Image (tube, rainbow, N blue to C red; front, side, top):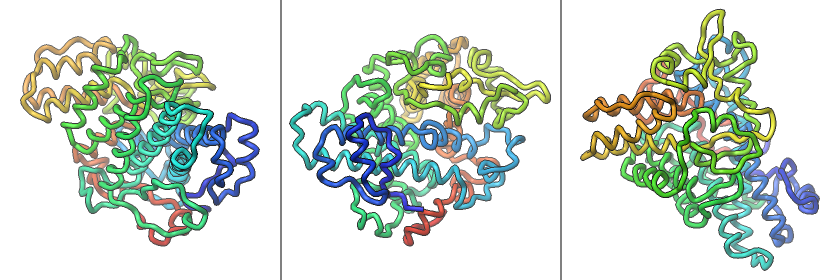
Length: 456
């Protein structure tokens, strides 16, 4: 197996037939030659291929979410008796785990293609596209690269709230490599370096991207929303507040009035979807097949009893419209992903509700807060779900409990709960939040090819 930085362009989704013919002639262990990159159409095709890997079921379109749920404590493992998933039950991870492999190599494939786009735009003077288009393409590539590094770090490394300056992160790749350079063994960057790289990319992306872009493409607001998420994961509540506040106040996006909207839109939509900051084009097959089944009794990953009880009592329409239950025995089942069609589906990558809940908690964490303003933020999320307005919670402890409960019932089966446990330094199914035993192994192919790779 080739290592992470190899560019396998043969599997790309290409929009230009002539460009596809060119890319099909490129060896799997090399980047495109200079002649290929002199065509803006070819560069756009590589950007499209980067998006395809970024949104693929093996990465952000599926396995990233599924893995975070398998890592966490909100899933009932009763039906997990084999396959790659069974390793999550006892955390006996192998470097051959197929889920870990798919996330690692697909994520780095997206990064590799994004790096080629950045290189091509820097080195070639395309006269058939405007500077505005060039900036948008570069911004999109940087967005893909930054988000990919961040999500890989969250799944293959200890959390930022552990020891970010010494804990191993992932390998940061910010350069398109030649075939020779691709064979050089490198070490993992630290968690801090991995986060810093993601932040730098997203800040530059935000400055280049338009406020409105094509369907399912990155915008300045999706970059800012991701920066809010990253800073919140870091427990940097000042910056988290600033970015979340900017998105809420200035993006023009709205929460909407139906909890099902972001989980029931097919490919033929006009963005923005109420409640979404960014949607990605995918088929959601991983989520649908994992968290829901037409035979509810055979749902592979039903909800754990604790989270289902919380949703039942506090979820409002998130309980009535986004869950159901099996009958023998009774177990909670998420229907979020069953709402989706089988083709042309848009999956929410980042939602506006997250910005409201980040802003609410950041207000409290930063101190000097207004109880009413904090309540207003999480009450806005509750209102969409038909939950009564909270007018009585006061003081940091009560407000934080309300916010975190709201977050749990809002984002079940979206991969959020695991990252919250790590941010808050809470044990996860009996082990410490920063225990390396709870992490997937770096895939076997990467370790064999890269002798400097430090294994989890």
